[in-house]
Length: 456
Ligand code: SF4
Image 1 (spheres, rainbow, N blue to C red):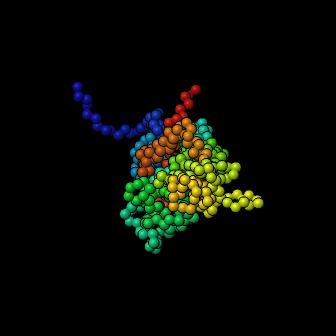
Image 2: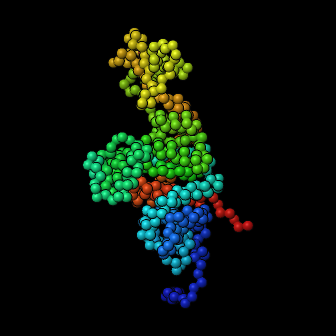
Image 3: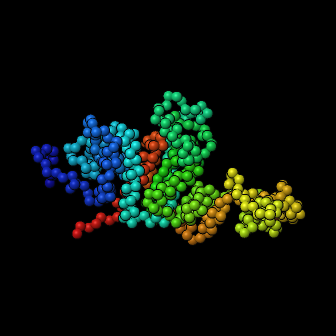
């Protein structure tokens, strides 16, 4: 039998609870269990005027921002619309049915002002990370590091040639942010190479062809990840250049040590972190085992002996060649033995005696065009040897597999958090976006891995 026609009839009174309409297994319910915003108001209080109209509740704006990142809603306009119509989102934002949702323009005003000045987003990230630590999700022994390219929010076809300089009509904020990062080793000071093009919309973004395809303007987001449960323990933006990313890794390790008194026993990374300087810093200064492939260009491909064919002796600080002769830094016999320190490039030079090489039958395989064989050794070669030795172990194989956890986080960032391209501009926009995204990823991790306590 056909049912009677349903016609909506507004009731005069409703007894309604949003709480009852949000499913128990809704993601935002899980996230809400771990979101503690009690510090937000005191932190922001100095940035509000004591006069004038009361502002929108900052906690509401933070909840909305985090909601947007957790659910991959990129546009603030759409976020406001979604909160307006979605009961679960209203519940998460502590809004009742009749409460007004803030206008989307409110976000950018606060974002460029008090939110950035107060360091609120870093505070949020660290609060959530502390919760991950308290819940036992962070082991603190094995960290993985990696960087991922994020295309800038700029017209990729409208770069101007660097030699022409920045056009005078650029906004003061864009220029100020660009100038502020020129001396930062994660940005302008990472390389002396001047990029071919510069973006007038976001001059701090770097023109790069690092992913092998056509070049574009981009930033890198750098993650330091605890490998036990793939919790992000720090995040840092940089330009997409190896030296900048390696510097960002060092900055993150130092910050974690300072803020959380945690230094990993091992760091897992790709060749981008395998420079002599980086390995030296890890091994010699921080005592961290580098599970990182060594960035080594000493291998020869023309059939002549490579450096690995020579044996280094620490006691005499010299190499022995395949013919049994010694290569030394100093050939004179000083009354007081001298220790080589390396040149400005960080390499110590060793050379064989011309007399030995001229008489050597192996010379065509060793130095056919030179008077004698020369070798270069990094001042951090001992640290590089530590990394080489680790690479031969089973633990390295495990680390190599664990590295995928970091790559998975980047895939998640782009697919579910919606950061496949930048939405904000400038280094501060990159800081904000990457920190909020990492905070959202850690909150989702908490919701997924920490079961809700059953009622007593
Ligand atoms: S050419 Fe010189 S350095 Fe090379 S194997 Fe012969 S003696 Fe040694």
